[in-house]
Image (cartoon, rainbow, N blue to C red):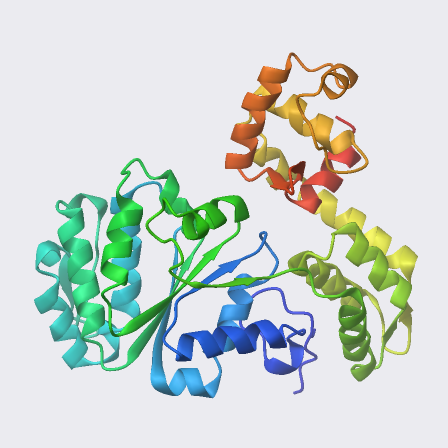
Length: 379
């Protein structure tokens, strides 16, 4: 039986024929990594960094010659937790692939010997690292890098949301990572991050350990004309059609953020019977449905935001364009904020929470979906 596949993929691996553009960025990423260079990959969230890396790592020239792994540290809050996640990923990506590499892992990771067990069903060793097992963080990290140096193929390692290390209570995390990474001869790294201000400080400030340590690639929204051609082609190949104006409505509504484009196009494709055309009214209804679907999650995001921070968030969202000065008397009075200093203090936290973004000195809501939801709630 033939299964009809919705070509607008929002999770899992994206086959080449369903991957939209990014040819230049993919080519540069592969070129730099195979040239044994590190890369800093920046964009706002949901723009497709992870999918771009997956797309590149699935290329035959990468799969044949390299070991690839992705370490997502967004949820980590300490250097020990970073090491816990990093060690588990290295174990899964390398040690489990052969008996030789498993033995080498157990021999190298002496500081974590208590974390090793045995699975009698699979007849294999297991690795169950807990935070409490990491009693010598610097030494354990050194062992992980020593193991990477001994792998049979060169490693390509993505550390996703790398700016998170700046928030650890251990102030030497950046310097320690830099000291080990710069001496590795058998691996290269992609430092991916969605908080551009922090990432730029980390890699382009002379005072920081990672200064000029990597090539830079920034993902911007895919051009509207390219995405329109891509979406219309996929509709057409499946006996459907979609108006170019409908695609533009979605693109403009979500400011070209890839994940949201794909999600609404996926719903639009599913809502359009073969032989029919998806129009503007259909995508507008789908956008409204999606905002309503995300209501619980968006509410939860604001659950831990203070009243003063919410007031500033709502005030910025009420403006028709990014706000240049959140401490100006006109802005403070217009939105009845407590004071310029209170607005300044609130902005620092909102930037830290990634609810606000600052670009070229102007503030705006970081997530266009959040901005739409706030407008729909009329706070």
